[in-house]
Amino acid sequence: MQSTEKNRADLKQVKITGNEEISPNVFVVSWKRDREFSPGQVVKITADLHEPPRIYSICSGNQEDDISVLFNVKPGGVLTPRLASMKAGDAIYVSEPYGNFSCDDSPATWISTGTGIAPFYSMIRSGRCKNKKLLHGVSHANQFYFEDYLATQLGENYIRCCSRDNNGVHFPGRVTDYLLGLPDLPKGDKYYLCGQALMVVEVRDLLIQKGVPYSHIYAEIFF
Amino acid sequence: MEMTKEPLLGKTLNELIQITADLGLPKFTARQLTDWLYKKQIGSIPEMSNLSKTTRELLAEKFDLGTAAPAKVQVSVDGTKKYLFTTVKHQFIETAMIPDDDRITVCVSSQVGCKMGCLFCMTAKQGFQGQLSAGEIVNQIRSIEEATTVSNIVYMGMGEPFDNLDEVLKSIEILTSDWGFGMSPRRITVSSIGIVPAMTRFLAESEAHLAISLHTPFDEQRKSLMPVQIAYPIAEVVEELRKHDFSGQRRVSFEYILFKGLNDTPIHVKELSRLLNGIKCRINLIRFHPVPGTPLVSPDEETIARFKEQLNDKGIFTSIRASRGQDIYAACGLLSTKEQNLKI
Image (cartoon, rainbow over all chains, first blue to last red; front, side):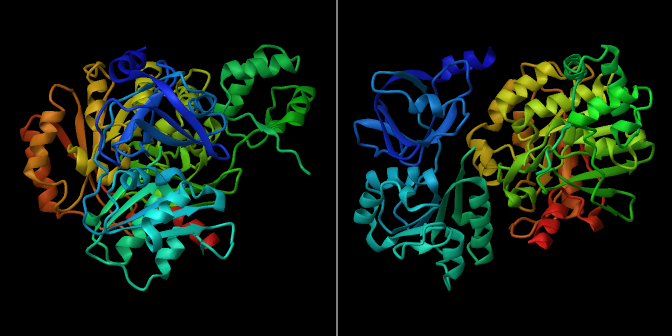
């Protein structure tokens, strides 16, 4: 009951404007943007006020008409199977954007796995990709979401690591394998990590081992 | 292929009533089973001597007892023991037994690995590997040498208990029921990073004590130490706690690991007293034992003592937790990670 009351206070009903499956079981759901946000921020979402909301990074640009988030369907999950079945006009409940996982123009490396690409995609779509390098790690090649756009925007600063499909195009292995193979990392750069906890923990340890100060590492973890 | 039988350990009385009814057994058999499972030390169904041979055979066809002896035990010079259990999926979990005068405290794990990614935690480096069942949690108490003399239980081993709340609550029901271990819930403490919806449910459905991992009162700093802060900010956790009464026997405490130069300053004392103002609670200060790959170190003893005094001066009852079992990797996650690395 308390959770429902809190949801009513924190969340606002919006109508979905689009819900597109961009890869098997991976969707981009959108609703009209009626507020400002900083790229890298997150929103809480639920389809039912009786259920605790889940948190997703915004993946759209901050000047676009819609706010969008990227999600994959978790079998047996409370929210995502239902969200995946929704269409334009259906109602969901969302919070104000919040969080401060954001970048300035200083040199930085963005490291993500899977749908952890979302905040970085938002940053790029918001025109904030100066001095940035993006590492994206996935299991299979069809999980490089937004690949064409990212390749166009970032060129050689877009590094794709694919751990299971070795097609000769992408780096064969995980992002940690790629980072381990680098002789040196720029110590003055900032490092932004977004993905599953284990990836973040492993990359964080690896960066520290390679001499990156902890104060230069920023992490966002999925729960 | 051999079929894995369903374990009886971890079943509640109501579940056993249903099981015995399904097997056409008398209703009182369920009570006999809880006695064998939770009050007596046997190792197999055939040892349940007050059940008829037919009943035992019927049960053994579908079930096994579900107990598992520790795969390894290490003993510290201070008497602390670290037990290593193997799960059904051949993963490792840890249980610590900490003797202290007339108390025997057992620190149990609630998950295999953890998905919370805290910077200072060794278990985080294993990632999340799976949930433990109530039976696997209870087994960590039932199957150690000190099983019959355990006085206190803390859910502070591997994993985040509120990320596995159903099984944790079920294990507490087994530990505190008269048909189970018959322990007082006041001898059980569940420690969490503060997943608010689960915490609210825990406070409503259990009488056990609660410990919250705090570690810093400042949002940004806590997020850098504990990524869960983005989902459940500590202010929201405390706001929820304010709705509950801790003036009676039920206790809420805050765990605070001290990191040199990071969260051990007078500014932290001031902010802690502001954050916790009005809540009847205590703070447990914990010395940090180095974890490979983290940039964090513990402050010196003088700083720890001063931090404690400053908090006590602000009216917050504060104690320093004794470090135990350092020679046997007693901090959670250290031993099982070491074992996993050996396996690899």
